[in-house]
Image (cartoon, rainbow, N blue to C red; front, side, top):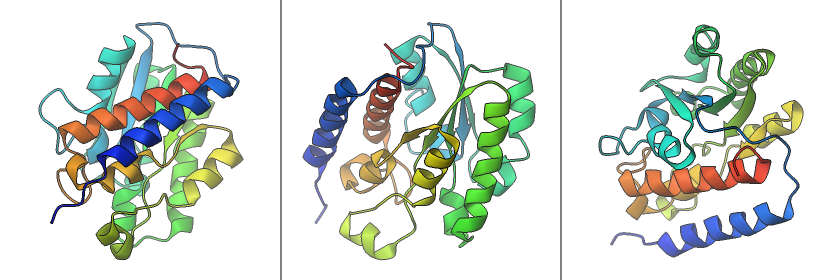
Amino acid sequence: MQKRRPHWIIISVMLATLCACEKSPQFDALAPGATVLAFGDSVTYGVGANSGEDFPTLLAAETGWNVINAGVSGDTADKAKHRIGALLAKHQPRLVIVELGGNDFLRRRSMAAVKQDLRHIIDQSLNSGATTVLISVPALSVFRATMGTLADAPIYAELAEETSVVLVSDLFSGVLSDDNLKADKIHPNSRGYKVFTAGLVTSLTTAGLLL
């Protein structure tokens, strides 16, 4: 029997929106047309979604920003740290959204190693002058995946605290905990990407990056 948790996801997004109203913005809002680099793996690329329903495309439609989809299917933080520099130099984004780590976890790389690679990516982004947003990725857990209760790997909150970047927490884990929102065990479906984008927009609004 298929697990059904859409109400839990919707309630979570609503609660996040309420919290957003109570927090002071950290950054100035980006104007329409601003260049944003969505840097990640197959989830950023849009595997599991219909054409044009990946989250960078949906985010561009929602914000009016020029969102560049720099997602590479199968990419790891270990490999991605070697390509971020050229992309930053080429596009000179005002904002970088980092979504990486899932493939590292599937390859059983240590949390410490993945954290070090993500820090390298974040440092390059910040050094370029771009505001940086880090999307938390679920920790690998067969038990939690079976129960539909995935949780973020702790390294993302640690990195956000240590580097003062914007953290989007619990969103990806929540989407992949709902069978109605995923195409397979590790990718959202088109509906899931819409929920994902809505949660991302809420986090960006909370940080003051989006009005």
